[in-house]
Image (cartoon, rainbow, N blue to C red):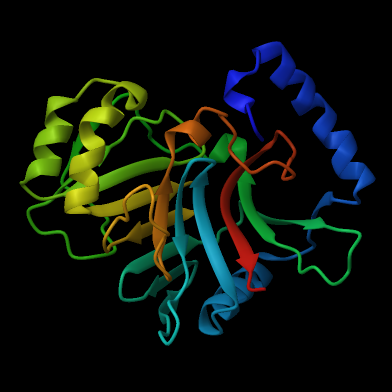
Length: 263
């Protein structure tokens, strides 16, 4: 929306309050699917086996996207509640337990495929997050090999997701250590260039699992690569939204993962 960041907070709040009514007028309705744990598990596995779309973890302005690049397949391992998927530059792990629910957003246009949002009950979905740049030490649950690397929480302070980077010794590690204890907004100008240049593994954790993305981080003016990639956009983070506009969910739920079907 043009000029959003220049508007007053009172003006923005008026816009937010009008959104639910507008969505209802457009026929966009959130509802819980009558899926069992096994139904959800089978859907996730099928979506990965057939590469039917893209899985997204994170919050508005800080997300990881997992899908196969053209010509690639997804390598899958699943046992009990845990599903683990790998491609060349991405990995995703999801745990489907009794706390997971599946929501969808129906639309009045039947030709548009509905996305699926996996959520957990808020009371059971807490994950450890930091409000400032924090050295978490050695990553105890990496999806990619991580010898001699350290995990740094970027300090977004969001209950829905933690956005971290896993770095070896180098410019990114030095920049992060120099900004320890600073909030993301203050630290970003001092770490951005090193993160782009070094392109460490990006790690996004939610209450439902994790996405890891490797590969080159494109500069701000370039397009995201096909296949797994991340977005870290300070201006969009300023909205404070956990989900995109149009995806309003009951307050008792915490979002974990969004599946966008292929067009």
